[in-house]
Each structure stands twice: as structure tokens, then as C-alpha cells.
Length: 101
Image (cartoon, rainbow, N blue to C red; front, top):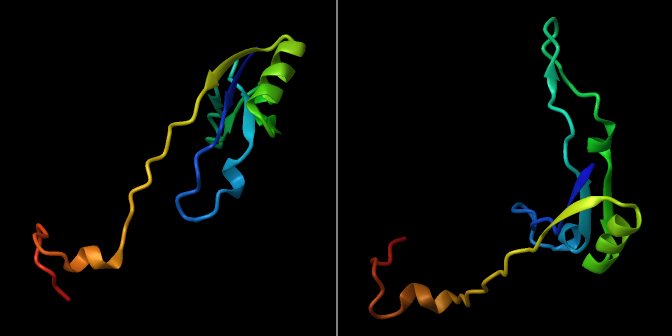
């Protein structure tokens, strides 16, 4: 029984960071999924894949995993780079491309 602790990435379609504040603990699959031959549905006997727990801090998630004897893999989030942008950059001298409408 292994788990993965990570901080989810920000949603690409939204500007807010509400869904990416918490740390998430997800169980890794113990057995592969099986395709049912008649209908083609995908199924698995592993019900722990449905469990997803959220924690406010990384330390809380690690403490939960160690207290319950769960082996875990910690994935640190990548640092985001903020590039300053301004509307005036479209008209600056020495711009690589011409300004077109």
C-alpha cells in the first residue's frame, strides 16, 4: 500500500488558485485495471484508488501517512516564474515582429 503526496497544479482554464492550495494524498494502484470483454468497461478490484484526501500543509499529510504506516512518495511542486507583461511591450522599438492588426 503506497501513496503519493503532491500539490495539484493550477487549473489551466481558471485564473484562481483555490483548487491548488491543499496538499493531496492519493493511493497508488496495487493491481492493474481490467477491461471487461463483453461491454468494454474498465474495472478494478482496488477500491483505494477512489480515496483522495486533502491536507492544508505538507507536514499534515506526511504525519497522517507515517501515523497510519503508509509508504509514500513526496512530490514537491515546481516553482512558477512570473514574467512581467505590459501592453506597451507590443509597441516597443526593436520588437522582433512587426505590429499587425
